[in-house]
Amino acid sequence: MPALRIVDSITELRPQDAGCVAVSGSHGGHSASQYAIAARPLLSVFNDAGIGKDGAGIAALELLQAQGLAAALVGHDSARIGEARSTLEDGVIRHANALARTLGVLPGMSCREVVRRLCGAAAGA
Image (cartoon, rainbow, N blue to C red; front, side, top):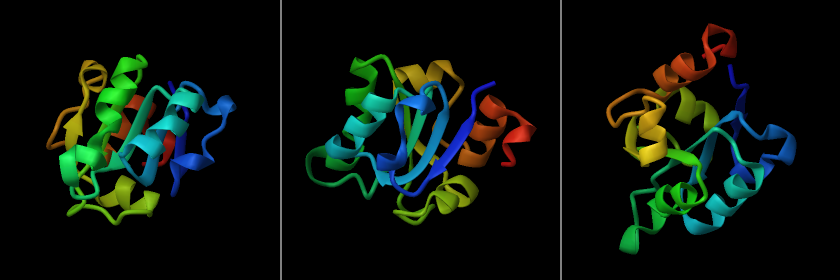
């Protein structure tokens, strides 16, 4: 089972986190997605930050998909932006790319349930 990494900022991920499930408080925009691409987690969870102009807050969905990485975003109205514990404990998935969906991550699921399914009870979720 993949390790769970809970990081307020996706910038905290490192190459040794490859293959983990990364739950962050970060927005799902272009700049944040670059850190996930570099670290290559199995799944990155971001905050949709209200989606933003031209979908800027959810750009990670397509960017990570193009790099062969799964991404999901919780709704900004379900979890506090910048607080990964809130993402984990309160977040509700609103968006998931195709690779995340193949892992069973679907809109409407709680982030806690996603982590439980992917990382097991040992993840402490």
